[in-house]
Amino acid sequence: MAKRVVLAYSGGLDTSVAVRWLQEERDVEVICVAANVGQEGSDDQAAWEATRQRALDTGAVAAEVVDCRDELARDFLLPALKANVAYEGKYPLVSALSRPVIARHLVAAARRHKADAVAHGCTGKGNDQVRFEVGVRALAPDLEILAPVREWGMTREDCIDYAARKNIAITATKEKLYSIDDNIWGRAIECGEMEDPWAAPPQGVWSMTVPTAAEPREVVVGFEQGVPVMVDGSPMAPAALIAHMNAVVGAYGWGRLDMVENRRVGIKSRETYEAPGALALLAAHADLEDLTLDRDLHHEKARLEPRWSELVYDGLWFSPLRAALDAFFDESQRFVTGEVRLRLEPGRCFVNGRRSDWSLYDYGLATYDAADNFRHQDAEGFVRLWGLGTQVQATRQAIPAGIEPGGRP
Image (cartoon, rainbow, N blue to C red):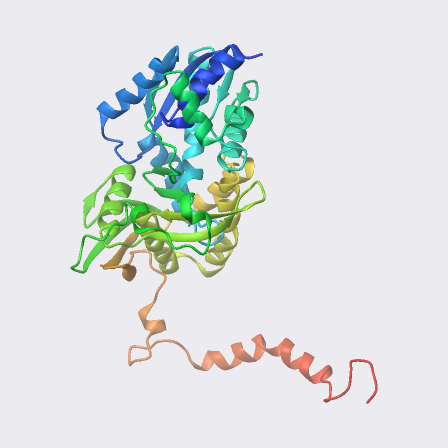
């Protein structure tokens, strides 16, 4: 039985209650780890210190804050960009991409503090329980995993009452609020009136895509081997570049998703997301691939991309298949170097230019004007051979109207 537990701690209602519940119900020492993955207010060091102190005041024997932003961007978001991530063709995996980096730090903290278990504050209905637990088991199969929210049977109102009885400092109220999870890749908002898939999302739920810019502008994103490295000629590190694109693109009110998705646990969930920087970078990256990838490579990569997204959504980041797909995607990016121009207008973001020294676009072959150097006479033989099988089938197996194959009139 576990004696010392590392808890993934957000400072919110569930994890604050979990600290005390684990102590009293499981008789364990609790070490809290809060991960800075680029949430709103992530640069506020005083707020992070307050979160750490809240964990200690609640009863944790130790508490620490780890800044994961650069690690998240480098090791998780860039591979997602190379994979043109889009779960069920839409969602760029905001929450799913932060869970493996948090799992990595939970395990590291468990080793440092000689803990024999980790814990999380996820419910039994969601995807994150899968992501945390599968990730931890892949990295440290010897650690026990505790999920107090699945055990305690308390509603949100019960948790607030519990916190009041135990003098646990919280900011939550009994009003039904939205559930929000965010990082530098985007923001996920669910619950409240949006649990009705017919209800329109209230305007107040958005924060990354509040329209403040009115004048159209263009942004040029520079890529090197599939990695965005500069914006408008200014070099930027991955985390800073993503945050910059969130601010620039989000100011035009673009980058929202409203969808019903299939959770790993087998239920459908209505979700809303805002990911202006992620969606803009994904559009730019895919467009540059159109220019630089060989046809067969491009088509095969597109076939494998949904599988990558599905693996990560399902919590299988630390799987051999994901690693193998990454190796394929990395090789595919050898010549994905160049610039893409994005046009921003209120409520719109779209590509309107691309260029690369490794472009496979040949003006002399593509043009219909006098510079055309395509050998048109070659087309007749190509088309005849391409359609030869169809022609033979139509000749030998043509069926007159009203006759079934092998039958009679």
